[in-house]
Length: 441
Image (tube, one colour):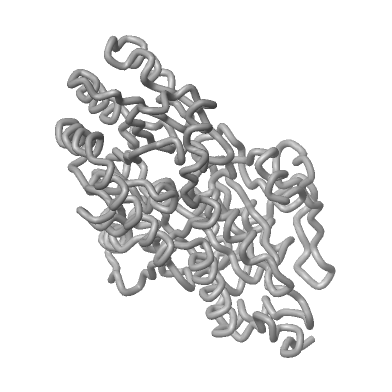
């Protein structure tokens, strides 16, 4: 069996094809798949579940690192760990070994491509992995992993699911024609397609020329218990972070990339500082824009000593509890996990009126929405909150109540589990607690 990555994977499972499957190509070669898609009934027969076996789910993503979509995958795997479901991850561009270890994924991650390569034709490699692991369900996420859908059909995987979780800068003006055509074809091959917001569903339905009714919506969720407010710990957290106890602390969490537009937040903070507000900014995250933002702060006499760059952190709860207000200035968003986490932490939130943000924030109740790039509007809203502790408290309480009631981690995991089981039972694959007694040999 050929290796599935150019370098041996630390802790990666050794793949072996059961004797009753097709013969594989000689070592070092990748067989060319027959370009004929199996019928649903054929795929169902290929995926019959042995007595007592768990449903095998293969999650396919671009890369397993510290990102919102990736953490969503990890939460689903942890939340749906049971005798009825078995999970593996397949990445296009590698993974963070430490992150995999932290989440118990040693020996459970396949790598299909090269980390630093540009376009890669990965259909044969995906097929190899699927024929070796033999999942009942392949679940791919976003454009970087969408090639797994036709691969699943060619590998005769019983069920294929694709989901869309957010935006990149190059999506704002619309997708290139080749992406629109490929997405339309992949969506047609999939047993289910979903997005995480209504807005994202409308966007992809338009781009793929299909009815929105063909796309489901499964919102994200966060751990509302772990992120609960800790007012008694605020003073200590601020002291540890080097933040003044009495300062008005504005913060945000996320990748330092252009689409997040953290420059607008820093400019708004400059306006507050010029007006005499004792404002401090807490930025949590890393990325290609980090150095640029650090240089901008160093060059600003108004921001000097007022901005803390924490970099990427494993646990954002302490940072959130050090803030008075959370700001999300993104130019585009799918469904922001960090915004949900801030709401769960009981923070008033100010976010741009883009993407799924209006579906999360009740404008004027949990916080406010503002036009992307409008520094003056953002600064005015921050200035009002800086001098109104009662309004901050009211917004924060409403934000947490909304996160708890509508966007809990338990609810998200249950939605994914229901989707997997619904599709499996619809295809005649025994699933859930009854799997052991209903599966036929």
